Image (cartoon, rainbow, N blue to C red; front, side):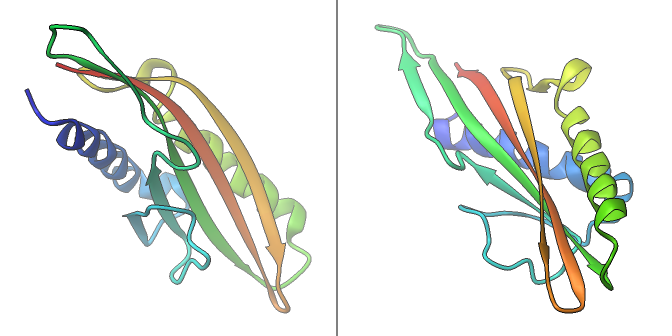
Length: 151
């Protein structure tokens, strides 16, 4: 049996690899990185960040006398896009929202099985934007509710 941290890292690596493999359909992402919290700045947009146990905790339940640990935890995916010029709000919001739904589909429905012992039970999508002087920053945030058993 792998350790819990190795088990969780395998799930995180799968999500990063899946996003990288689908980068072109998600706006030609420059990078996908693991972070421990939402970054204050995305230095190289468009880019994605995978935040394990972001805004939550890993709730673990063991079985007495057993070797399995049941895990329930969130994984967040944040993608950030930069749109040059102003007055692109409606188009950029729709484009970013579309990318968010496409990314969500990579991990839900028929794709909800992340590894042999980990599945996405539910997900939530938020779309945001910030207006700067001469450009707009748009983002989507997906929270995946992951259930997994190590053992």
